[in-house]
Image 1 (spheres, rainbow, N blue to C red):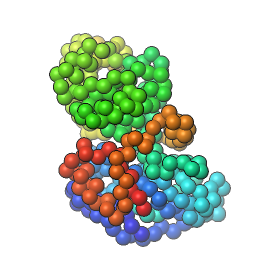
Image 2: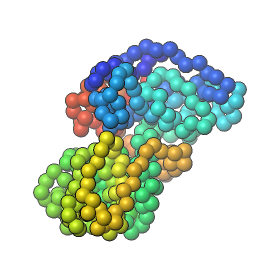
Image 3: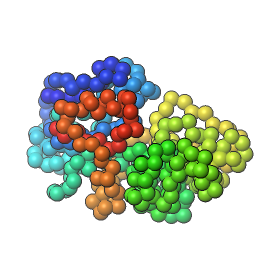
Image 4: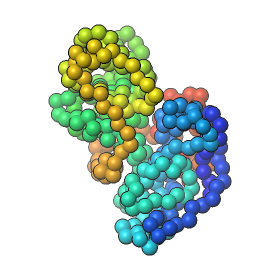
Length: 313
């Protein structure tokens, strides 16, 4: 079977590997679409804090058909179309248990959009961890996929949402998808705008950039947050540094988030089905998997060119 593997720093390859064998407690799934997990995959591809050795792979978004069911499988049958959020990488076939992150997709569902359920669920999980509610002023750093979905999920929860980034195209897309306010953090005008609109009760750091200084502040009361604000660390990194006195003065709560849960996935499916979370406008490239390596070259050299990418198997 085909699979995508990172074979050296910055180099991906389409490889042939053995097809897995179905067991009593598993299902054999054949991939129809898989979604690129931009930040995580680039981190591993380039030997960041998630990676550093090769060969390696890291992807968790696949829409597949159930091909075979083991004797202990009770909730799925061959022919079902499912989304799985398990870390198997981009592969033509994979195994899943009923206890894994898996959801059956309704008939007529947009399967290409469903290939990005993983990143949407990560964002939704972050919103729930921060306990976003009506009346919150939410600021999201980073208008990539995670930030875009976090903005939509925060709006679903009734918050006023501002998105900041250095890419005007991504900011305009966030505005079109319902974000209340946008600001280009790369400009003096954008930074002034955020200072004027502060304080924010919840800030989501989805960019991976060194922005905790502006968020928390480098002195008493100089950041963007209000008293007892929640700062949610979504983008992965090895170490962070922030001004302890400023954080102490604000009594800030620093929240770390990881992968999503089955309940998060179920809720994203429900919200996407109702049109409250929009995925299709965030898809920029739909690529046959045989051409996928060109996407990884772009992910290595020009990652901001990519947004939602779906591989067609």
